[in-house]
Length: 135
Length: 135
Length: 135
Length: 135
Image (tube, rainbow over all chains, first blue to last red):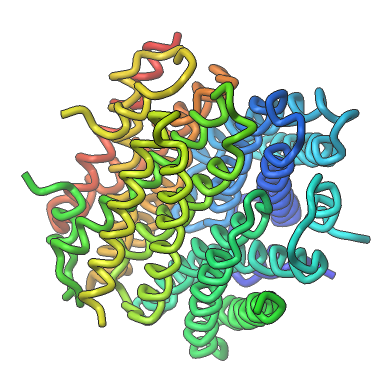
């Protein structure tokens, strides 16, 4: 079943300059990553070891904000600006890389960080896959 | 397969004062609604009939912002504040109702509004279902 | 000198159903509160006493998200929906009240919480002042 | 009188790796730009010439989202990541440049676009000034 993201891309009344399946997959990965990072920040905050997780929380908050914004920008096609999309996708891939690395350091101790590290890696790949189709 | 939202709820290290399945369904409905409203605003903007769709675009933008914020607040459980969650869910259900009504007015002419109306209705129901478990 | 917020209200091409000075003051208070709450959450995170500040951080994050969204909704006048503005302002005043109360509990120990408590109180008042003009 | 942004930087309990005055000026420019772009998008939407302003609206929405996210990331100092800040500031300067250029094209016809073009230019400069201190 196509996701609602894909259905919305299909109803866009003008042409879209990117592969729709890759675009939909990236938007879904970004929104998923934003949710998981928000939840991981909060789980870290309630963890007895919160004092060891402050950098992780901060990275989670950044990653959630940047993923949400990138998903919004990629959901707009009117007056498409390839330079802006590329620049933002680069920043987002950087954020996902940082957050994935930081969560991976806590993955053995904290299941929420393990799930979050995986989701950040997948989101970084999705951003880079979309970037690869844009060059 | 449980969504990542549910997996993150399962890894939260303290107790959660709400039914996790209902909570996960609401968070997913909110994030989906935010994506669809962002896309519908942009599709309206690229539509030849944009001059008839300006109220719809505005309502879409509001609904997207409020759904994203509500999903974030519901993804946090540390220092849970039932009064705030309830108040925000009420505002969010109001936004989804307004946006669903406005999109429904354009549903026969514009497929993006038809999909968006359905998604807003579903999100409003999800907010009200969660509210019902909180009283 | 009028703020840029006021200048933008003056350039809006249709009528606005609210007192512009009160509206501009509320939007500015909301954006200021969002910035201060974001900074307070991060200052708490870097504090040696972070383990005592986790509820404060969570409340800061909620308040920042809700204030940003409320400022955006109040910055839109196209297709004005009084019911939605009111409902969101109520939720936002609730968030500012919670965050102001929580920060006030730490105000003697932490200067960032003291400043943040004052800013949250001022923002709650601004929301209630605007609400008072809407009923 | 120092802005609240500066007061919050002064209360941060650890060291900050950037010049505080430049940082505070950039955060204030970003939040101001986000507000003005949100208002300009809505003013365009209510303009009789909305059909000629659709690219402007889209660029305004992107710029508002990216400025808000960049202001949030710059308001966090815990676990500072220079690479991420730089990458996001580059994307933000690109967004401000695009939005400033697009609004400038409509500045003679629309006062809201004239104000917005000036604010976007100032925000782009603030981002580049901060970037210059980071290299």
